[in-house]
Image (cartoon, rainbow, N blue to C red; front, top):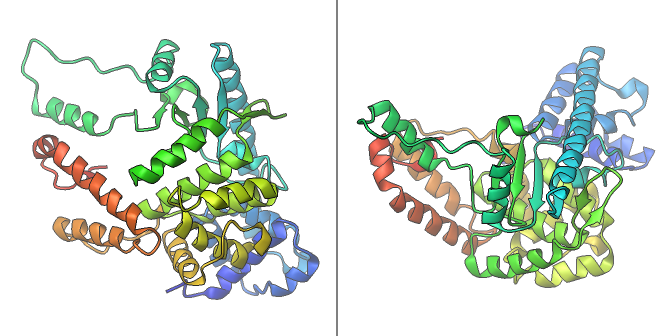
Length: 397
């Protein structure tokens, strides 16, 4: 089921279209009369991580149709904070680019700051961390970051005495929560003014190993075609962004959820991309394991933003699109608003397994390989979980 107040969703979509330059006639679709309705609208924008974008739409409304003064001040204050954080992210991205260039490394800023510069107002996107790709491969990049003191130091092993239970617990938990993932590493907290993920692979890719191999081969070649932008850092090609960010949307959507921020990013990319770039990605959707999620996403982009059919990567699927929209509205940004209905651990664990299976319509193969990866990790970490007295590794963090 969709939100119990579909008018709130419709009004939010209208504000987003206004922010992206829809004509004054779009205001006729906007109907908010009470302070309570305005509060619900603001809350939904916050839940879906589009507060700054929605505020840009509010500014396009006639003055007599804008929110009450107290909410208007709160909204404007948050929008200004978003602008300030965007400037901070740009400054930090430029600093990191210069730092790694001094070490002879090629870099590219992925997603966030690279996308924000393509918006009508480059400071209205609600930004998060910095994702920076660094050339050289896993071992070389990690070695460089350690030499520069940008990674948390390795914990010293305790020798010469028996570890206490608390020390065993901390060590076991550390082994399950490594900073180095399959494709990136988190920089130390004091290494940058904002959270930074340093990527040694251009993407987290897919769970399906066969589609992932084809996708990663494409991205590894395309990431080398970077462009230096006035903000002071390098960005990958739009062709790279279309493939990489579609895979990113699929991964996060099926792992928990996504907000409208990521969907808005993809709308911006498709508006900016040329026909040849869109055509090449469209031809590879099935090979990259992204066809079904793309068909759902194309429906959303037409329904919410009014994206023209000729700019879409494939035919929109209304059934999958409506299902995706239900999940986006219920879970919010990265699924943070999904509520657990199971209090007992076994039922909660079974509920999570069942919820994963419910994503089969979007990609049954991806769901299958996700579960294979889960059970492989489950078996590998069995000794650690016994020590921690935990049943599910996902319940630990």
